[in-house]
Image (cartoon, rainbow, N blue to C red):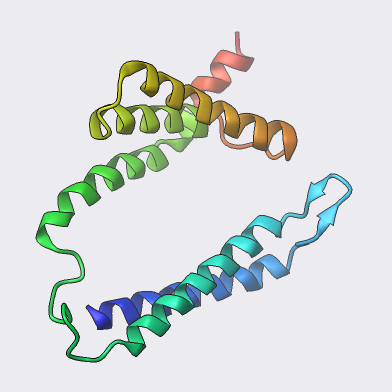
Length: 160
């Protein structure tokens, strides 16, 4: 497991450093109309770099024969919950041009809180409606950054 953690940390570090470099090509400062185009990518990549450094430090510091060193990186019983989260998320990402961020996010959050979290229907509705609305107002209205709305929402908003 130590080797897997070290490789993941190194991979994350390489990707994050590339993202920091690309973000620095854009403006990372605050402009007259809000944050520059590289502001969020820069700070996100910097945070990933910091976390990857911590993981790398911990994995290199652990003794070679440490407890759990011969265990698989992902235990057999962990695949099912991992796939329950990953496969619907991958489907929403694959359908983002059709569903958009808001409807896709609402469907994902609603399905997850209902099927996995086993929450009551009013919680499912509140989460799946309020979070996309919060995202809409944050990105579309506050930061003036349009996110993909998808064909469904664009039809409902613009083609009627």
